[in-house]
Amino acid sequence: MFRIRFHGRGGQGMKTASRILGTAFFKTGYEVQDAPRYGAERRGAPIFAYVRADKSAINERGIISHPDLVVIADDTLVGMPAAGVTQGIDAHTLLLINSHDSASTWQQRLNTEANVLTLSAGEDVADRATLPFISSRCAAAAAALTGVITREIFIEALCEELDHLRQDIIDQNRDIALSEFDDMTVNAGLAKQGGLATASDYVKPDWIALPFESAQISNLAIHAGVTSVKVRTGLWRTMRPVINYPNCSGCAWICSTYCPDGAIKVRTDGYPEIDYEHCKGCLVCVAQCPPHAIESIPEHIARDQEVGETT
Ligand code: SF4
Ligand code: SF4
Image (cartoon, rainbow, N blue to C red; front, side, top):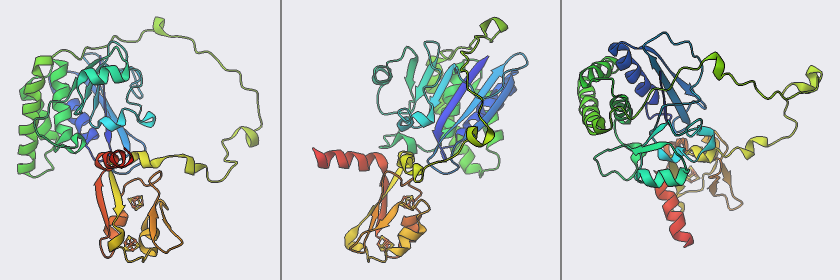
């Protein structure tokens, strides 16, 4: 059985990638499951989608914990524990990472025995996560890596899954996907099917004896205030709002009120300040600021600028 996980951020189309790949497998004669798994429902938050494909009926259910192939559309997710990108990878797993860094760099960085490849996008884009048509690229690369899906069937599946879009958009997706498929064909078959779990694979869990407590005590309860402050939602951000103070008129109730996360505080001098530990990068403040005093810049560029300022 093929077990494939797509990891990306909300808005990158990982659900679409899994749909396209699932349909391509189905048209090739496989039984298929494909499903997305969302965390926070917003652009930029980590999500994953998975595909199982087998020639026999699939009895496995739930998320894939031991994948054969992991496709990562945004390499900033790799170091984020909540994204679970590296969960269950081992020497059998193939990782395909959309990244400027080389496969050997990732192999060392992750200290993994898993085989690593990087996505071969031709364009010279600064931020690989914003590559256009990333879902079609990822689906095409994954299809080629399985070695069992033909180019023709893949394109048929892609056009079917995208048929709600304008024809020129479908055409652009098809062209990009075809070039990705062709580039990845040299690695066809590197994503290998994992075996089926059998009853003899069952490992008895190490039970933890929990003392019986009354429902009043054992139910999940929040006993302390401001615990959400400890959740650093700023890690989700792909775009950073930056206040251009010379243009800011200090009407701070506007941006601070519109921020859905309360991540903009008003300083004692009446001007706003953004809490980047908790700003999720929704850019509502950018849209609402009357004199357009908040600009948005890609997070990796903002981080590079910070490093430059501190060195
Ligand atoms: S809304 Fe714009 S102008 Fe008003 S305080 Fe916020 S950043 Fe400044
Ligand atoms: S982008 Fe602006 S509105 Fe959105 S969370 Fe960050 S500070 Fe708040």
